[in-house]
Image (cartoon, rainbow, N blue to C red):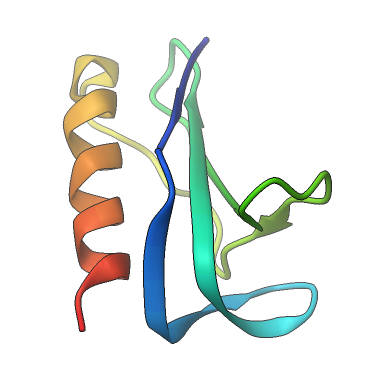
Length: 81
């Protein structure tokens, strides 16, 4: 299993979470991908201990080697104004 965690980015328009609804501000994204390509997405406020999941399920990469690229794309999309 691989894990990618972003540096802090600003989500001025917010990011929807499954647990608490929309969160915004200085956030960090963590993605994990297992050997079968199953992808898990979690987000937190900068420096917080509690992580929230992004809505949806059954995220799967065709090739687990794409994990790092997909992580960077997600951060870019979530941080856009």
